[in-house]
Length: 382
Image: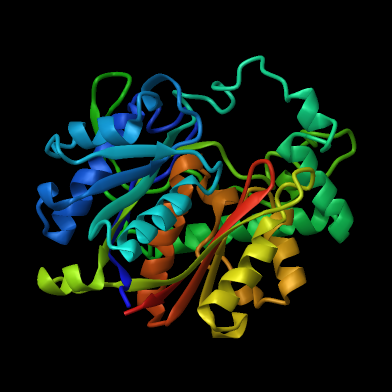
């Protein structure tokens, strides 16, 4: 049976919206990652058979199939195709799944899967405009803003504002500790950025974590989506800019090229969930992917569950009775940011490096998605 292995993975630092990458085009930012990925792996760009990229807001510089344009910018030969997909926040995780499926089917042997999002230059919902949901949809389902979904989840699971803020503070604390200890250094591709005054600076540290964050500061932030609500800018993920990618191969091809795989993908799943609650999908996706992998949650050494809003990983922990000490151990999107289309492979790259750091075996990645969906992936360190 064919196996899909991860040969290499890298990402940019994540910039705050209107932050360090505000002057950097998304297609050019993704090109930096693509170029560095093949350089680190030591393969020829001409051997790549497809570039699959996640991107949610496909307008402006992210339109016109950013996977293809970025590959051309990065100097890939013209015979290397590219395709851009949107599965909301899990887009680049889905890119990994599609790439893995192409390899498992025997159609391809070498695929790059990744993603990019500039929430500065292509703001969220810019591709929606004034469009409203179809009445034929709203007659069947109550469609609300994701923030309202997060409020509903907090209420249904009984999480207090204090619990959400405590989780958020922990995200910042863990992220700052990880940065101080250099845990993200090897996975981040330094990017040279021109500032407003024309001076060049190298960006190699995630911009999101705030050292000044405290429970008092978080507690004073107003609710955003609902009067007297619990969801604030402090316990939700940050809007961000960034890019990430992994290099996937069949085990046979990696062996033939004398490359040492770093992990293998042993199970993948995608599920639909209630489109009103919308963000609860990682719970069922985790159950399904563990069943497919033939292991239990106790076998997993590290979990990455995207912190779209604090209630999401908290509900996941509650329902699965998971170990909180294994969850997002180096911080999550509340502190580090959530560059929509790039988040899946960003988290996968970080999960891979963390497994290597602790010499763990299994890692789990789960991401909730708009309109009620979720992807989950299990990898095994090699």
